[in-house]
Structure formats: structure tokens, C-alpha cells
Length: 433
Ligand code: ACO
Image (cartoon, rainbow, N blue to C red; front, side):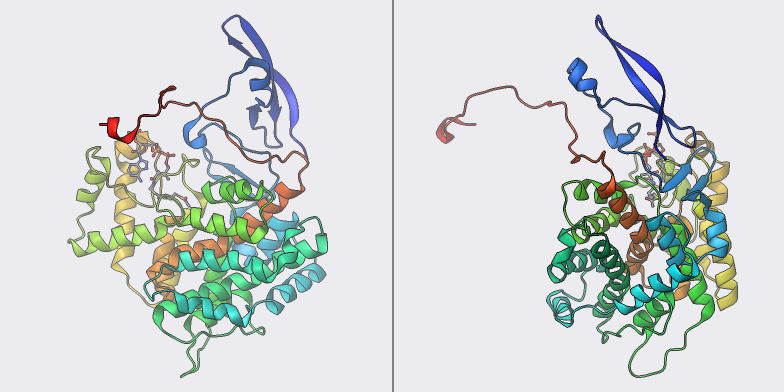
């Protein structure tokens, strides 16, 4: 489905007037199409942080931040969280519809068959110090896959593209688990194709050759849930990075590698690690949540309540609601009492009643409670953002695919307004200062 032109908007600059088309999407969101603006007026627009700028049209994910709605390919996130699994959701995002039984079987086989990485790649890990952050390793390794599968440079070949997508989805958990094992100084555990996607990941992360690792179905279930909730979120920072890099016709591995790096930042996916650091600090300092709420409000302090606020959600993040419920369930099931969960709940309760947060419409986001579940699963802190990346992978792939297949795609190249020095002469070094 395409966006339709529904009206025009008039723009007056000095004595010149231009008519700009207004386009409307399938959920009635409207945008002023300024693609001819510079040609007709010589003006560009400026919009720091793209607060008001739509970078593309997309049929993958709909979200309404005011109402707290999130749907993948039209299906509400609540239904997917309850009824689907991660592989099925990945298929939905990438190919547009839920798979039939046959499609699901083929897709699952593709993902298990390709789960091993080239044996030579194992040696790459030797070059890293044991303190290396797994996000840095993950990004480098994903980019390195392009050396092993150069066919990916021909995205127009559909069969080849499907195989590349399968390889990427299959190998990413293996690379992620190997990064973790490297940081622990433990031997790598190879994938087991008889296991489901999430169980295989848990097995590669936690099994050791010295003893039997018993998989827990509940853990598989909660991991599926977390990955589904992270699977796509339309034009966020990392997805926009994947699209921007891909718009230069960089290959899929290179584009995803760049997306992983964008996700790493503490204002984006890195927030899940920062939330846990924050909760731990509050705990170690006696659990005084009021003090930290006051710090978050204090404009002289750089402290922010991590896991709170969102560029798009000005209401409850529906993913945070689901994760909070799952958090209670998982901790109860495993029999863990985590004081950090109590601190998180206290912070949330306090913030939601506080005028500062109410006025700015700041609510818990997806990262606020996810770390507590990762901790309960035994996943170490520096792997939290890697878990986010594993979840977000199908979304990145879906957007890269949509972009490469769209006839409207152009290389991403924003304009700027120059504010530097005007022309001046070169000064020889002995005349400077
Ligand atoms: N704690 C305290 N104040 C906050 C917070 C917070 N977590 N978030 C926003 N604010 C305040 C800002 O100081 C600003 O106040 P002002 O109007 O008085 O200047 C106002 O709320 C608006 O915030 P902006 O930073 O302008 O909003 P923006 O949309 O640019 O930023 C962001 C969104 C980056 C997510 C921000 O809310 C933040 O830094 N949150 C903490 C980090 C975090 O949790 N990131 C994960 C986001 S979800 C994800 O990427 C997966």
C-alpha cells in the first residue's frame, strides 16, 4: 500500500508562495512532502534530531506514541507477545505475513542449518582483550561475514538475498554467545541444530563441556518474549543507521554492523545496561529513590533517570508494560527476590506521580525492566545490549530489504546550514597566534 496525496499545504517565503503535497498513510498520519522544496525555493529545512522529519514511507511497523500502540505488519504487539515466537515474528517482519506451516518449517531449517560460523572466524576472538565489550566484537564479526559471503553484494538476486538473511539470523546468536564465552575465558560451545532458536542461544551461552546443561522451557519462553518485544520499532536511531548505510548500496552485513554500533549508545539500546548500573548504585547507597528522582529533575545535574522517556512514546511504552508483568512472573517462578526490582518499581511509582515527569510525559521505556529479567536468566550486564541487538535483527533486516526494494530509495544525504568562518586567507605558521 502506498501513501496517498490528500491535500496541499501552502508555504509563503517572502513574496514567493509554493504548494506542497500532503501525503497520508494507512493509519491517517499525514506529512508535508518537501521533496521539491529546494528546487522550487532554494530553501532547505532544518530539524535537529529529526524531531519532525519522516525519512521514508514504510509498511513494516506502526506505532502511535500518544496512544501507546505498537503493531508489526498490523498485528498488535500484545497478541504477538502472547501467541507468537521469535522466529515466526521475524518472518512476519521480513516477509510481510505470518508464515504458513510450510514456510515456517523452511525458514526454521534455514536458520538452524546456517548456525555455525566459519572455523577461521573463531580465531578473530583471540585478538581481543578479555575486557572487550561484546557489542564491539559483535559488530566487527557481523561485518566480517561479508568477507565469507561476497555474493551478498548482489542484493537483486532474491534467492541469494533470502539465503543471506537466513545466514545472518542464524549466525548472530552464535557470534553473540562466542563473544560472551571469550569475555568469560570459557571454551566456545557450538550450536546444536536440534534445539529451537532461543534454547540454542541459552545452550551456547551457558553450557560448559565439564557438565550437562539442562534447558528450561520457561527460560526459552521468556527469551522469545523479550526478543519479540525488541524486534522492530520503526525509524529509531539504529534502524535509521541501517537504512542510511544501506542507501549507499553497502551490503547487508556492513549495514547491520553499523546498526549494532548505533544501538550501543546509552541513549538507545545501551540504556538497558545503564538502567541496571543506576539501580545497583541506588541499592548500594541505601535505596533512597527520592534522592535520585530529585537529581533527575535537577537541570544542574547530568543525571537522567535511565529507562525513562522516549522520543516517540508520550504515554506508556506497551513493551514496558508487558516486560514488567513478565518480570514479576519470571522472578517468582525462579524464586528470586531481586531488590533492584523493588527499587525500579519505587522509582516508577514516584516518577509517575511527579509533576516534572507528568508534564514532560516521561514513562518507563522498554529498557526499564528488561535488565532485571536478563539478570534473572543469568545473562551478564555487558551482554544486555547484545540481547537487544539479537531481538532487533529482524527489524533491521526488514527495513534494509524494504529500502533496497523500493523504487523511491535514494542515497541518504542530508543538507546543512553552514555556521563556520566565512572565506579567509591561509596564514603561514610563523605569522599565527
Ligand atoms: N530523566 C530526566 N529527565 C528527562 C529524561 C530522563 N530519563 N528524559 C527526558 N527528560 C527531560 C529532558 O531533560 C527534557 O527536559 P526539558 O524540556 O526541561 O529540557 C525533556 O524531558 C525532553 O527530553 P529530551 O531529551 O529533549 O527528549 P528526546 O526525545 O530528545 O530524548 C530520550 C529521548 C533520549 C530517550 C530521553 O528521554 C533519555 O535520555 N532517556 C534516558 C535514556 C533512555 O532510557 N534511553 C532509551 C530509550 S528507548 C530505546 O532507545 C530503546
